[in-house]
Image 1 (cartoon, rainbow, N blue to C red):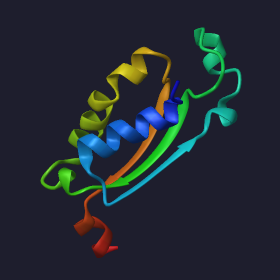
Image 2 (image 1 turned 90 degrees about the vertical axis):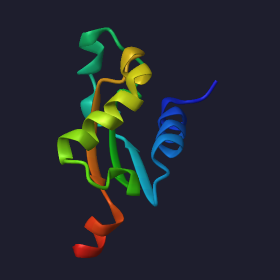
Image 3 (image 1 turned 135 degrees about the horizontal axis):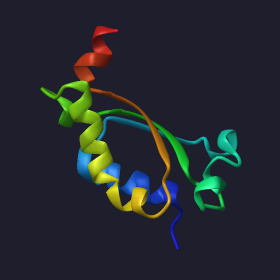
Length: 95
């Protein structure tokens, strides 16, 4: 059985072909929070930082919606929160 982390990584890599992808499980920072919603065992809160050409021409909200749509199955199976930083390679070179 694969972990939620591995499933998230797999979906994001296949859908967005990222130049850079960082995924951090922050569930421990929210101990008790998810349990109130009937979810146990962690793997409920993640921080994702991704750089992908797939985001070119997309507004910030559209980028977020695309990632949420790609991870819909994870949200339906207990993913509770996702903190996103989504950029294009051009956005990164400007900084």
